[in-house]
Amino acid sequence: MRPTGFTRLLRSLPLLTRQQRAQLAAALRPAVGLDSVCATIDDARTAPLCCPDCGSSHHYRHGTNRGLQRYRCRACGRTFSALSGTPLARLRHRGKWLDFLKEMLESRSVRAAAKLIGVHRTTSFRWRHRFLDGARRDQPERLAGIAEADELFLLESQKGARKLDRPARKRGGVARSRGITHEHDCVLVARDRGGQTCSFVTGRAAVTARQLHRHLLPVLDPDVLLVTDGHPAYRNFARQARIAHAFVNVRLGERVRGAIHVQNVNSYHQRLRAWLSRFHGVASRYLPNYLGWRWALDGERIASPERFLRAAIGIFHT
Figure 1: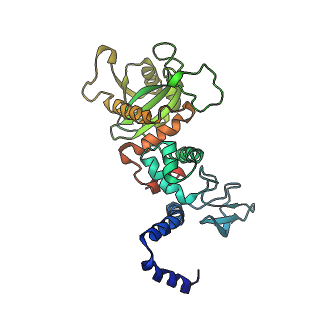
Figure 2: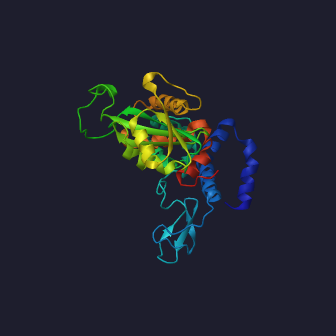
Figure 3: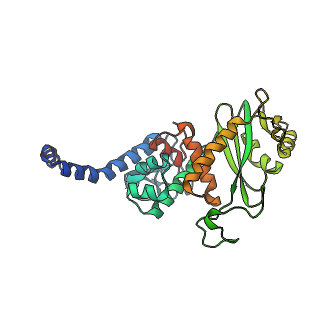
């Protein structure tokens, strides 16, 4: 629009009725949202962009793509943007992303978020897991000091699957036998006294020392004190990894022995289980995404849609 026409438009704004102003604000909202998304991505990017195809850092500006600067690689000639190679590549309706992330911070269901944002429920589901695919990787690199570890067991779910490898359960149902079996997903949660938390889906049934080596060992500081219950897998793991280990014997009624307890991680388990219940069952294949989502919400660690967007594209600094 030419400057004279824009000035004329601004002068006519006071003449609009309340309904017309509401219609104008609704019409501008997607464009304003798109500008906010692009500004968040551009301002957060500190490392130089590289071509996602060949890895070259030699490129030049080549127009724009839905508000984002587009580049052309001098080495291979491919075009790309800041979203290329991220889980958000090729997603549409960018102007609604921040509004959708705001609803995710409120833990809205797929259908509720779709209705509030004005997208289809399948789009809402796709967006949820695209954003969580990057955000779930935002976990602490190390747990230091005193770190507690314990397992949480959830009945495995094939929610949304077209074909089941077992008989269907009515309304979620229960396991066919009592106790912890191969029908349960094992969620391992490790949390230090500073509140840093790592969570993993180790597999089915009880955790083993081999699984602890694979998941837990890389995030433990060498000088950490690992506190657990009396499960023998933890003792074997600590002995093999040469990590200081203490445990409480829950079977004998021991809960706390000075600073030796697993109250922090058990409290996290309670919050996680209560939060998962609002979704009326989570498919096992998507469980790691929900663990990352819960960690993002814990203590309002990610408190703004802009911060959530940066985590989704792999930019984890504040």
